[in-house]
Length: 531
Image (cartoon, rainbow, N blue to C red; front, side, top):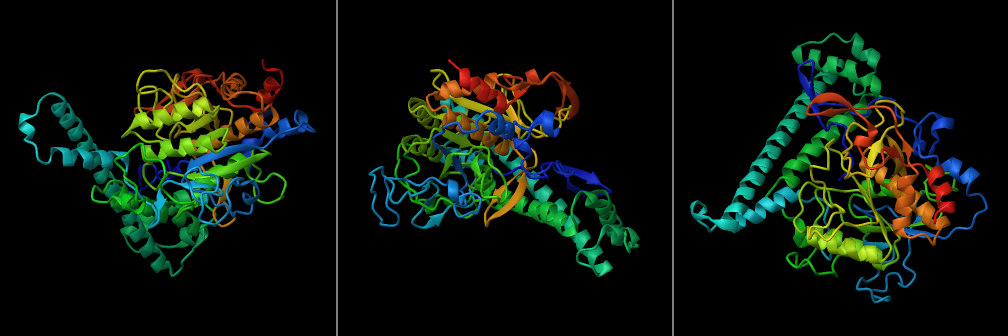
């Protein structure tokens, strides 16, 4: 689950199909997720109030939080002071000093890298499954199939059709945005300006139909952006890159980068592969997640993380595409074995190749008293009836992970828009909601940006969990989950959401188990008396 893109849906405006701007309104102030609803009039989690009123002069211990993601910029100005360092490993001596199977794992590990470099792009799991089934049925008479083979072939045809639909949609999306770009380039050439103002565009007399369409699109949307360059970067360029990645990598059955890793991919029990490059080629998403959890609170730079005594362990597992179950399982095991007490997993996918290997790793983490925080997903779907892997429910029907919190995303306003329009939900599958709209956080190069998604909401909860475990270290992972669940702010007004392309209203209690938004103040008050 990479960062949520603004152009998730396409709309027709003035005859030109362009992105549907989900969050183009004026974003809330940085650190709004830390704010207090009563004091600041935005629906944050009240963490600053918590530090000021409940935690002053209280003893606390450092807590290791593993960020299983696409990589973390460990040199970022607002992160470098909170990065985990393996105390039993000596840097760059090419020796596995702590004998954990990973050489020079100073700040974590990269399970999608190897001696040949690092995986940047990968397929969706859908594509990998189609490729697997295609090989399986290539030499068989599909007209004579019976039993399990027939069932698998039926599944293969369903997945193949879904893949073809995805390719067609991606090609349409690319063509539509590229068509708008051509019209826009023509308009700018006619104006002889590279970054015209809104006033310039209003005053310009179109020379042809393309100019007219491009002008109308800009007049409708440019007021939501700093200038034309920002609009083009965030919507046009990013949109083209998004669909290009889908066509060249995500849906491309002939693309398989696994050779870069150098493992025996068919051996799901293989543990020791990868490299120690914990940033990787694109650490934007993981760095953003890390900053939300624990960006330096006292250096007067950038943003303010939620947890004040945290060490971020980067476990690189998620490419541009779908993460692989083998890597996720090994990442969970690595984090649990090396001292993480909270694991943040801001990723998800519609299909799972080997759920059992992930389930086994989750079961192992449960024996190590680890709390897992997982993002619910960004498809505005009900995950009680639709899949978003990994899940806490074990495939072998042996139960579920007790120390697992599934997190939906909320916005800043305490009104019908409180549920983020993109966020998945589920009365029994999603536990809580947390701020996840226009969250400002760290990105590579000591920079900062606003991102939206349940990927941003999960680390809000992970940060809160780290605070509880830091100030009340005797509490178990299951107890910390119970505290977070019991201390939410209940929502008693209806929420607007789209179901089957129709706007409807639901009670918040229909969207998640607790029916509320996490709150640090309530949680730390409860932790102080929890038995």
